[in-house]
Image (cartoon, rainbow, N blue to C red; front, side):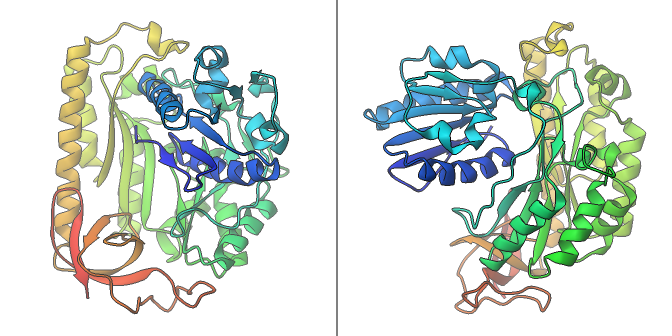
Amino acid sequence: MNAPTKSPRADVEILTLGCRLNAYESEAMRALASEAALSNAVIVNTCAVTGEAVRQARQAIRRARRERPDAEIIVTGCAAQIDPQSFAAMPEVSRVIGNAEKMRAESFARSEERVSVSDIMAVRETASHLIDGFSERTRAYVQVQNGCDHRCTFCIIPYGRGNSRSSPAGEVIEQIRRLAANGVPEVVLTGVDLTSWGADLPGQPQLGALVARILKLAPDLPMLRLSSLDAIEMDDQLFELVTQHDRVAPYLHLSLQHGDDMILKRMKRRHSRAQAIELCQRVKSARPEIALGADLIAGFPTETDAHFANLLSIIDECDLAFVHAFPFSPREGTPAARMPQVDRRVVKERAARLRDAGAAALARHLNAWVGREEIAVIEREGFARLPDFTPVHYGARASSPAAPATIHAGEDGRAPYQRLRFTAHDGAHLIGAAA
């Protein structure tokens, strides 16, 4: 889990934990809270993906109370949706609101109601909230889908997000056009189960159709990124755009979770090891410069040494550059929590080995960049990212950023781009300087 990110506003502060969808919703909540004239408050947007995420949420709430003793503390997000009463019982908490409620301005008006959390499974639509920009101008997240119809045995998130539902394409495109007009150089399409977008819309369009419309109807958007994808649900049009279109970022993050067929079945995943490898090889063959990342879980219940060996080897078989390695953590309320557990010491040791294998894969990826140069997006002074999401530390920012001809500057005439040359790496970042 990452540390919570903070809104820059002093009066109403937003602490965001967890996924990119939470980041998008925090931006929407900033506008909704302003509309409701909320003041002197801290909104904690929680995550529930693991027990550690919930622990960090509680820690953030206690810290917020120490730092803002007179502020109203409003807790929302997936952890609050799943277990609202436990958060309401915390003496630091003023109010708890659910995931549906946090998308309505009236929820942020002053109220004596301590808990306002409805049945998320009854929600049938994804509310669209037009956002002009993000607190960081280099990358904006746009929600196109929410919820999940799948029931992976380790995952609690459907009970925090509800069933899958999609934002209409027209609303998504309007959102992206507004962001591009305000100079945002990259937009990330995000959702809980992104590749299920469209299944509940008329005609059941697929994600590839949405991406094609965005590229056509938002021509001023320099770069479109995709958040985590389910490997088995990548439609043919999406594959073609990801591998052939230069305005689609050369980076895919895949929800693989494991590399052994038996464990994948017990996780209730929908792909096999062979299918994951085949997809990654096809993508790399069609677009060699693309970088691949994946979520992988070590120590899932019943995992043997042989199962774990298949997990480790999937990193090389899929030519992964970025590995998000997680130790399995039983989540109360999920089937996996009732399965025979692997000894915690073994889980910890396997997770460490998985992280080491991921670090080696990243080092190989970084080695391939040393001695080359590329246009990077400057995220902050001294730090940038390449189109394939590789992080870069650079020595000095040039006075006149340069961008390729296919990339447009923002309305101020400047885009946060810089051509960098890479001389080394530190195992986690490239080291570069203005070329």
